[in-house]
Length: 294
Image (cartoon, rainbow, N blue to C red; front, side):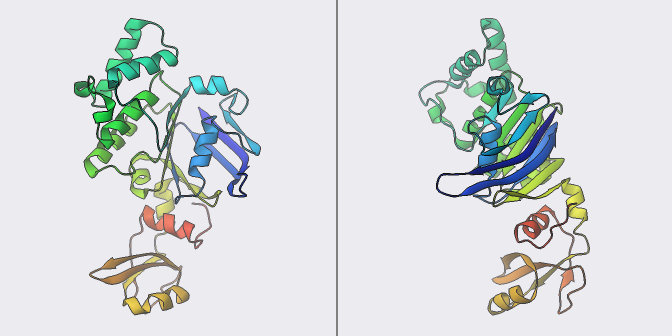
């Protein structure tokens, strides 16, 4: 299954251009969509999920025209938005059963089998009789992916799924996503670099509604080897270093800024070469330092 996005643009009534000529080919498997808040990720996800129309462009899922055959797409879609509502006074088991009916699973025994399997898969079976309003944030997210998996979807979209989760819940959730079949297109939209690094074989980085890079994460990291340098400096020196070097990341270490810079040559001045990670790839694109595709 191939998801093809061509020349997709969207400008809202307030003048904000959320998408600017987006072109992406997304194969089956886990695809990471990275970008800061406001980059256009959620707009792109809602458009693919048939919840809003673009101003121009096309989206095809195999031979299916996503923008014209919305009902067909919805029958094949599993969607977990960044924020989703649940009925707080109903049990997970009952709500999943109701949602399965809405997805067209009419056979009662088949529906029961599907619901129980999803509860087991998401580690919610022992809590199936509890009202969802009593669930923790991580449990609600796992319920969210359970409902997204109803009907064996061929396209799954999850938007910022690990935001706000503690480390243990995040690991459970990522493990669950990693178990989804390789013949399904799974789009993971996030601003958390580690989620993409751990799960995805392909990714894109977008900002200001534009695709800055589409690459295999490993290949993108390889392209930065020998070009990423670090140095610990004084706080008073930071602005001066930003003016002299392509600073792609900074963080405090023992109260002093540890800066990473992008340079094809040794910048000297006490900088040390480091092994880059996906975080360096991300920042090098967001700050406009590296524009070549990996």
